[in-house]
Length: 529
Image (cartoon, rainbow, N blue to C red; front, side, top):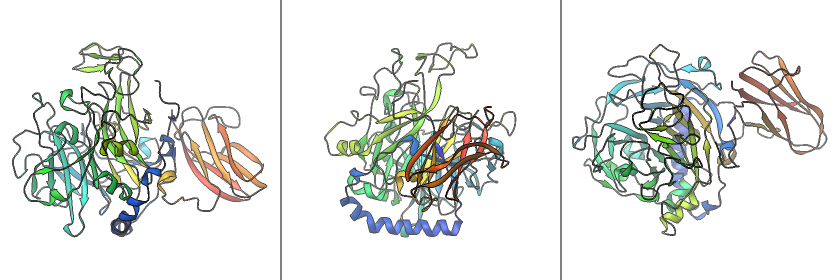
């Protein structure tokens, strides 16, 4: 698959950080206070000069599993995947089985940095069992919205928190839906809370009924809101959808009203069937590696400390092309139910990165919302077996991005397939603390790795004695890459997954130790099959 030359092949990894619940709560309140204090300054500090994020800047922090049991009226088997993160309780709200569209709350267990399913911690029984929401809205559900597209816990200070829920009709054949959003007023009472809705986002239901994410304080004044909502094609009835990921800024204050109404938005990025992200949606040319009928985004956010709008999802048909109700190569011999890749193996997780300066130009009327193109895009490495993402959530307090890998856990039973939740951070560009402090620093690109990786490290003093060694999970030396005197400054060395004898090492977690004049810095490395 052809991808931009700046697209690396994989992620980096780092040690996960634990944070006690009380500290997380205090940090969250502090973050809200700081946001209020710095927002005016940030607006005048030219956020347009912030750096762009690249895939190599994302750090895999670990993952956790979710149980496949039935809790109340639903389970996480064949789950839809949208999630919301609550920093107050260090928990996620997640949509269960597609049939019920019910929501449950699970506490997040400690993350484990591994690409082996059995290594991961399993979340316990839910803090709140599954409860339906779409059938409880105050204004009824006249447009028969039957899918949850995205969620977010919205903190409104003295007013407390509410759970904002976007919804859509899966098969809106007339393409005439307008309603988009419900408000669950008490997130701590999923089963009993009042649910106000449905509200209507300006911009069109097929363009605003998906993910919800916070806008960093430094961008809020320029973009015209504190949060983003978006949606994309990849669902039935493409003519109603944004044929490419959208982005609309909004202020959540109108949702505090007890009466459903229209919520103003600011269009920042948007496409249509008349103006798609790529015109060759069937990829008849076999040259479209950007967006096809199989492409879908499930989460997008502006990464703090950057000018990047990062969108994540999945795609297909980039190698073999796309067909409609055909018999696929490498398939089971049956006709697919709609659009599908001509080759059943031609699917991948995908990402698209956008320059917020372009979104700002759309807001200012300088360019059309459909003229924007991503500055980087490509395959998103799958740490566990999956071809689809289900949803995402971002916690500004910890800087962690959570994504759900659909049907990735097949080890709990014959018909069990709950999602796996993976977490990433952006420390290189976001200004989050560097755990290396004043010590020499090291990273590996890519990480996880398939065939090889490059270690990049810095030496702080002239004429330092440097040793770089790789150990397996049992503490045994696998390979010594460096043992020499080196000068101050940046250095790099490649490792081709071979031990001291030249044999290829098996998949697993490896420990890297960089010693500079006897001072050690440690790094974890994941090797994939």
